Length: 208
Image 1 (cartoon, rainbow, N blue to C red):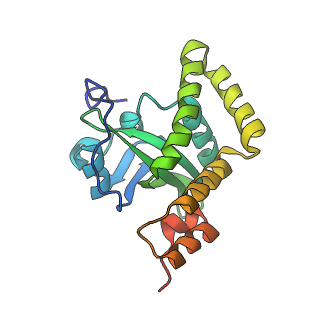
Image 2: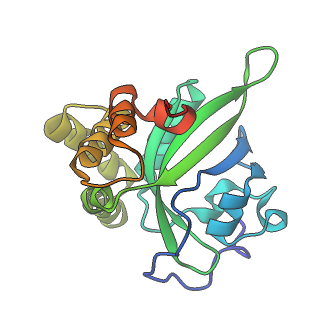
């Protein structure tokens, strides 16, 4: 991690950003940033010159438990796409919550060559549900160890959700989206999101 790029102080303040945008970045196999779109640069507050060539964890917020990224990398290295809810850190020390769709990039031989991450804003109702879990995982990690945090996380998913993390996130996102009285899309579009899931939410186009 490039400590020079890390903010000197962490602020308990959400950055104001255009939540209608999709934040996109591409990395190599080791998480080094190869590409970042304008939304990534504007939201993270890092210029493209600053961020390209740097490890992606330069925007990792200290409130994020390590087990989430462990699960993430396990899936990606197995060639599986993955969704995660993540709290990211900006250059000024502020934060922004996103739901991220991680996909696999392959070369002409079909080998994994890198990863693409597309991020969209998370409903506040989702944040209020996921943040306490992350806080507990982080506290266990800091006061016990990473293994204890991972064991609790696996037990939580089994006993309280009956799902793996990826399915849990999909369920949580869709359940909260259903409760919203007003969203930017029309009711027809809203139902399409719920029926087709998050892959379509990130990559599909709305029917007209």
